[in-house]
Amino acid sequence: MRADIVVLPGDGIGPEVTRAATRVLQAVADRYGHHFTLSTHLIGGAAIDATGDPLPPATLAACRAADAVLLGAVGGPRWSDPQAKVRPEQGLLALRKGLNLYANLRPVQPHPVALRASPIKPHLLAGVDLMVVRELTGGIYFGDKQRSADGASDLCGYTVVEIERVMRRACELARKRRRHVVSVDKANVLETSRLWREVATRVVAEEFPDIELEHQLVDSMAMHLLARPRDYDVIVTENMFGDILTDEASMLAGSLGLLPSASIGEGRNGVYEPIHGSAPDIAGRDIANPCGAILSVALLLRHSLQLEEEAVAVEQAVAQALDEGALTADLAGAGLSGQPAIGTDATARAVLDRLCAPLCAVQLRD
Image (cartoon, rainbow, N blue to C red; front, side, top):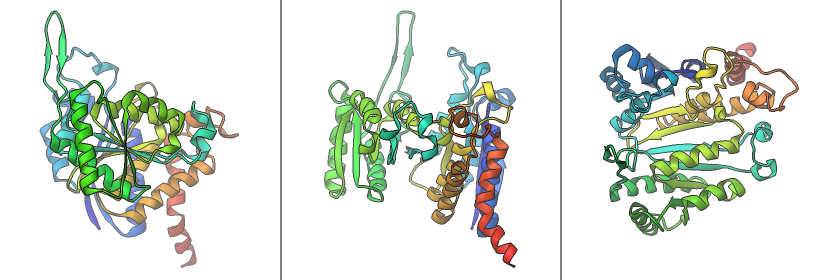
């Protein structure tokens, strides 16, 4: 297979974790005989510094022409003034909208070695395997905004079409899993949530009768997600609720550094990124956990390139590296290993060694 992949390192630890991820992409290409053409472009604070624009037109054009986009992270203290008219996060929102990516997928499957790093009791985490689907293009983040001397307002709006398409995506994912979908809203208070619940109920009844649908209010869902996470399969919700719940769900995994995400639409292209931020306090120190970025490569292979075998191979390589003690400071610091923490590059090397092991074995036999 031939594929064009845009790499957006971004800010903070973004360049470090994307460097690790691109090494894994190249190893996949070598092992399976693919040809991936990688091109690097600016986004976020780095783009503001260079061009004044958090998403330069050249970056958006390259992303639109690509088969997939691999993103590091955006933002940092030097651009964090909430009063600023131009901020790094605007680049990420504009990229999602520019590519019409309406569903953000965040799988959460805690690795056994990391259970003790989570603030949640380990017995509650054993067997957790859930997928959060967050709607990306509607809601309060994109609504009209007003500010006066006496107040401010943000409009939350949703259309039937926006709700239908993300519900269909959640149900399609559930059909490949345990066929259970929880739709999260605030229908006891918000009109947009009442519309959300009505549309969700209709879509499942008419198009997915084999899917079990459960409704939860967002506040109760926040409690259940921590108290009984094993009960959930696919969770689907609107933009702001999804933003909050997915960060909460990351605590189940023991570290933000372990979790990937995929932002997808109707076409082949998508944006793949670890869920962590730019972590400027540890940038350039070779201590960031690259596993979230590497596992985002697995999602890229699965969802944009339809390379399931290769995706599974990457996931297994990460799992094996963790099993054998390749832990960065966020995990080793929790007392999960008798060995000292290793760095970003060494973790990537550990994953690469296990990913390339079958190929190396063949070469040795030859």
